[in-house]
Length: 522
Ligand code: FES
Image (cartoon, rainbow, N blue to C red; front, side, top):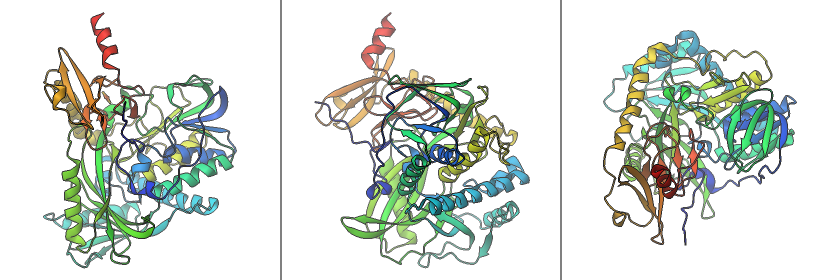
């Protein structure tokens, strides 16, 4: 008997949002349909695009291979920031002052748009405006804050220097206070947004995999189950674009990021967003949630990022996050949540949103969340709904997916060299030399002659073998012991233990080993 791990979207760890938010009831597509705009992906970028198009009177269809917000939107930590993660010092260096100003305006507009949607649609999702605090990591000169203050101020942020940060039991030194940031309960917002899309006439189909996406008049979206969608325009908002083999992925780098949630006494932590300047940086905020029937305040803290498929030590990373938190807020209680998510970094800290390079003019993409998926996703909704309707938008050039920022060339070379190095896995041995070494509930890569196989032993002791070659561009996948997935170290595709893809860019699953061997022998 096969025992499948219990997946929540793209992994088996349980984000705080799943504690007290219900998934909206949706259906799968069971017949051919036509529409003005087809959105592939029901995360925040896809649903915001659908919502704004539907509100503008367009007929809209949304397809998702999983559930509403079942991808990386459901694994967010829920910060709504107009301060770019990489910092305005870096955005200015790579893209210049005018672009930094536009970046700020777009993210501030995204928070305002979320606030407006919450109000217009009556979404009960704990949306709050609050301050954010940025402080230097231990050992870093506070001058880093001075530079960031100047660049952020030039970008237009409402930012203030402060001699201290409201963390009374630990001196983090001086800080920068940024007004008018925000937070919300991610899944409650997404459930409300999905309901609003349908209220305004949009149609949402979940558990419907788009297996082929072609632009043209009309665009043609083939689903794995058979039905076809014909559309005037198609928006691919699948976190990592599944309609692109190479072009975009040389400019995207996938990272895993980790989050712990610690119970804290009500009123103990000053409500704010907290970020430091460490590399990778830490991020913290509060969220109230019902645990065992009791309302509990939880301090959510994230960080400890690494390249996807290139580390297998979530417990150690979560322990470091816990220690960092207890040092600053010593009265924290037990750890009540731990989860991980995936971030797609770009070369300049800004997403790629717009026409898909080299494709038909009615194919659009939104990708490269850069750790700011909620605001970038909302910016995508505003920008793409304008592009689909052929309306002008001030951010077209800023987010143009075809851009190649020359001042980020070093990062471009370094990330692609990292990808190239992963191909050495073809000539190395396996993680283990035989199946006997694989514990129940765990997986490992084994060498079988010239090939490598991905082997998972389920809780009943039964083995499940898959080809270890990622269908996207041929790298060897790696076992992720915490999310119980096979993760590709090259561009971040991820697969369940049965080989089903849960993250693009691959839109195909891992091949069954037997099937792969038969092909090799031909
Ligand atoms: Fe590109 Fe796996 S995601 S090779």
